[in-house]
Length: 136
Image 1: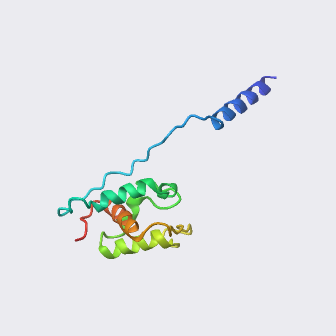
Image 2: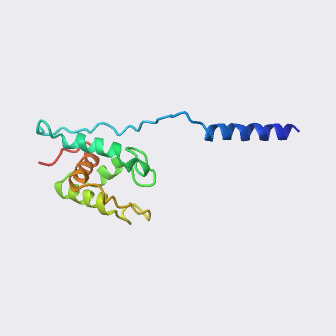
Image 3: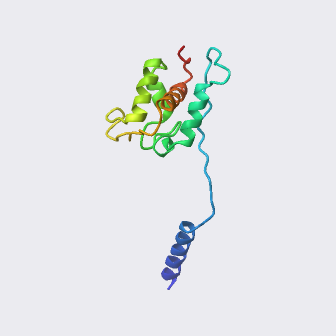
């Protein structure tokens, strides 16, 4: 009887947690881009725009700023690749077309609906996370 009560209590607890309609919203900390760069055009802070695009996209499903999830942490990507215009282009291509075999066997899904300009901004943000100076 005692085991049955414990089992029922556990089932009730799980059911109430799963069926909860309260909207708990978790907020991911995508860090603050650390850029010690030359002045940026007044209305074009591309790194900040990229951070906003990453935050509102599905990137956080597989990536986190500092922790490895399905894919590598964004800071690990920034450490692996120098912050150059060529690497910004490379990362933008990978965002749009997907990739595999670079960080293991898990494939990065393509995001063909992301515009080229947005992909470039997102790549610029990710590559900024290790504090390297932004390319001219």
